[in-house]
Length: 392
Image 1 (tube, rainbow, N blue to C red):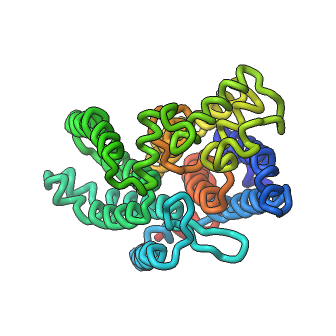
Image 2: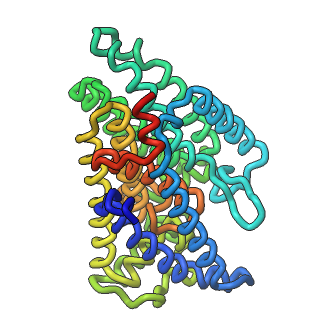
């Protein structure tokens, strides 16, 4: 029990609340799906509960882990090779869901390697960048110092994109970008690049894709259909815009306080993916805007706390891990909520802690476990593994 006082409750309490709420909402959003498919209405509930319990166990393992083991070049090389093989295998044997071959089917569950790639990139880039800070400080060029982690990250991100998984690739790229910025890249230059790229996408890219779709190009492309739905959802309300339009209806039905838990109309066949991509729309419909905002506040508390931990780290390696973890949570949440609200094209990513998904739940546990490990060190926790690491 002595170890409990070293846990960061600003992270643990919101994590537990959101995880329990996620189990409750997964059941509410998926009961009709299970019944309509001829299965049990409790199927997704049982699976998500198991995922959360396994996640807690995994989180405990990561809290007690000697973090030096994660810096092993042999281990990182082995995982890089494993992920490359997995991504190539997906293109040949992967289970296709919503236009992306991103899942391996193992019995009753599906494994999504792209989720675990995010954790690997956080650990790998933190090690690669932190290990070369002296070269950067000595005046070596930024690109000459960091070309290797950029190349390794780009290879994995391109393989994720090839599934195609645009949302997963964008989140992974953002994680790497934030960590590289934190290493000392010129913020003003980065702001110029980012603003220019965003303006090009909004003013040129999206209208061009919409025009190409109207002309009949790539009419069978699932990703292009999502962009068309984002541009003109109500013009395609009976087709590719159905998800976004019904998401709006769910939000409108819920109002401030919601229609009551279990009483959603949109989850009964109107809104596809109610237990994954659009679970926040169902939550807002049933529990109202107040609960949806409370969920965002709890997530915000976790993210800000992780940034605070990173800011107070005594080593660049620990700090970069925290910044990568915060970027992961922030960007994934934004992409999901942005898709629900029609602020960004639907990318098919889950909402942290709330959406159904084993790979996402376990990846979040891995990431938070490492952050909690770092936080415990700041508070003076010295388990045997840590003592051994500090003497090596």
